Length: 271
Image (cartoon, rainbow, N blue to C red):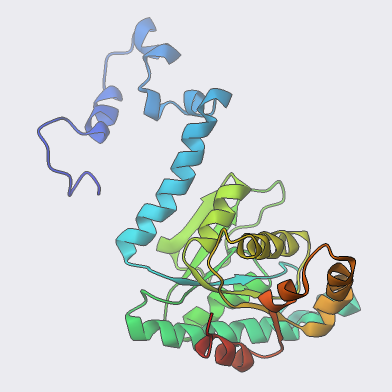
């Protein structure tokens, strides 16, 4: 609902915001206390308003996605530092150069999934990424290759880059709170694909696995691209052997190598 569709006899908030900009300039009207509360940046950024800011970050993307008719998403997690193959010579390490193949796999997976999404007029199986470079860029780029749309969930960081150029502008969001951003990744998720990455990718993957493991989230396919990478950085069997997870927990995810393999798993999924 917005000011154009809402019907009631009271003045709209936007009208008062515009009127407040044309009032006489006096000591009283210049005082911070006189500003409309919802139009006062200093007030909105006070520590006491954190619950309101949390709610706003939850509501804004939710309302826009709902108005757009998007019902389900396919999540792509993965490293911002993984280059596309044509640029792998500039990679910081030999390992990153080798991992560049997953840029192409992410792009192709996103293309294939977006073709499938367009069968529902872009309402189901919409690609969603963190909106940054690397694997995230590849995911949004694949949606463009298919002629479809995709979502980007950026977050403000000290070294933050602009959103990658392939995110659908109307579906490009920016966050202050990591927790709310991660909620939006998972609220509509029908599958989760994790490509090689760093701390952020691990954080996102393990939160999703924890929610599924504890029954806080419905089980969906969790696909880890690059078995060699994931087995090298996480000793999954050691966790099971130690009893810190159960043997059944190892069934919560599956290793895949290619875009087509991931598509096959998702299309044949039976929870």
